Length: 117
Image (tube, rainbow, N blue to C red; front, side, top):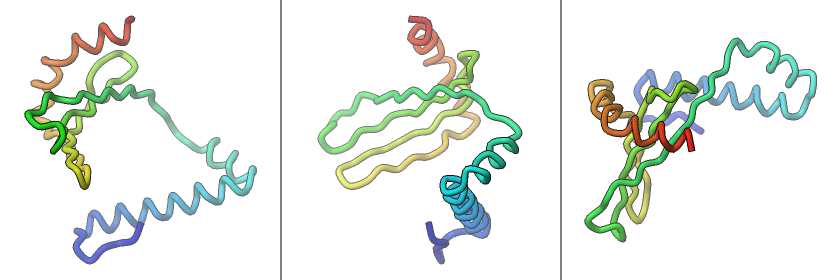
């Protein structure tokens, strides 16, 4: 991924770090010692379950939209993203924090029953 001229300084910094990490990951794939060193130095990992909710669309041939809901291992929705997919592309936006309680209230019970089944 290349830095673009229309990216903010923060986005450029993130892309630079992502590119650096990808070089590190590729090196780890080629060298078992580098892979073990990387794995031994990972400070934490967390299990997250992602559900995709496809919302009703008045014209599904033209576009589909929905939510990616992320739950922790305790079944609590901890993040959400909104996606909009039309014939040519997909856009994904992080749901603003102030919308998360509404989404959590609406969808929590549905997914708790799915996880338990």
